Figure (cartoon, rainbow, N blue to C red):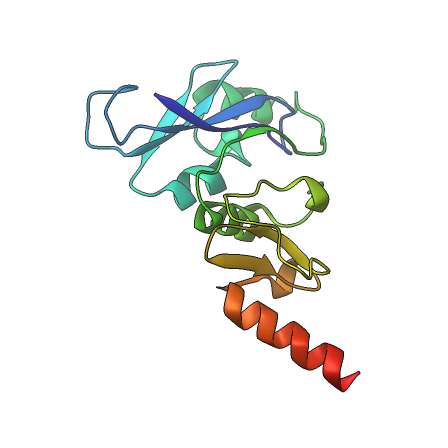
Length: 160
C-alpha cells in the first residue's frame, strides 16, 4: 500500500486518505485507488487517482458514519489542510494541483524531481530533468520543456 495523500476534509474536519492500490497491497480487487475515512474506516474504490483525490474532500458523500453524522449536523466547516502528499513526478504534482486548487499551497516548498535549478525561477515552481512547471498563478500553470522556458525568458529579457 502506498499512501498518496492524507488530508483533513473541508466538510467534516476528519482525516481522509488516498491510497494507491495498483499493486493490490491494500485490497485484493480491481480498484486501483481508494479514498478512506481514517476515523470511521469507510472506503470507496476508484479506477483513477483523480477520482480518489476529488472524493477525499467530502467523506459524507460515501462514508456511512460521516453521512449519519452529517444528517445530525455534527460537523462544522473547517479549512482543508493537506498533511501528506507524495507525488513521484511533475505530472502527478500538476494533476494534484489542478484538482485541489491553490488554497494553502506553499509554492516555494513544492517538490523538485531532478535536474539543476533553472537559470530563471521567477514563476517557475517545480521541475524535473527535462521540464518545468510554470505560471503566474495556479490557474495559468503549465508544464513546458526547459528549452521552451529558457527561450521564453531570453525573449522577455531581450525585449524588456
